[in-house]
Image (cartoon, rainbow, N blue to C red; front, side, top):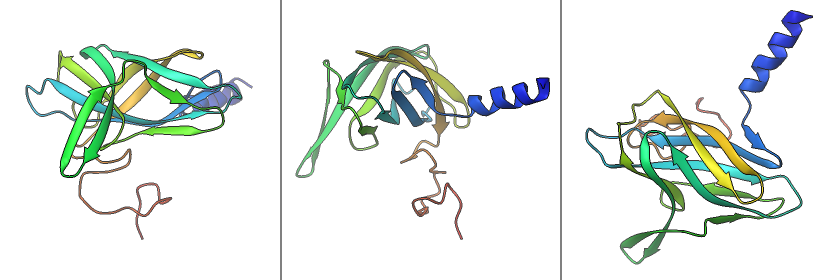
Length: 163
């Protein structure tokens, strides 16, 4: 019986982070170059509830400040700006914070992020409250959660393996 309870507890540790009806998955940050003052955070947030919620903030012990940012493209120019009101997470939908789009910006880093480590970021939602989320630190040039930095394209749904 104890073995079954331990196995069940360990299986829950591998699941995405949840708070009420909010699920956070595929959270990652890019490794930083030496003395880099900023880093980016990327993730998918799903709202399984029947009420809208809003991501209103974030904090991390490795950064003096964390903001939610929007990146827009106008011709050849990319512009980035903070979203002080956060990002809506509509009921029954998911929102992706990704490279080249909306993302978390960690500023005033007090240490670098090293590929292969996991860092914890606390996300704050208007309704769901605070959620501690482990972020895997990928390569400096990672474009997605399972990008190994090699530049090869992994077919969607193949979980990092290729044929």
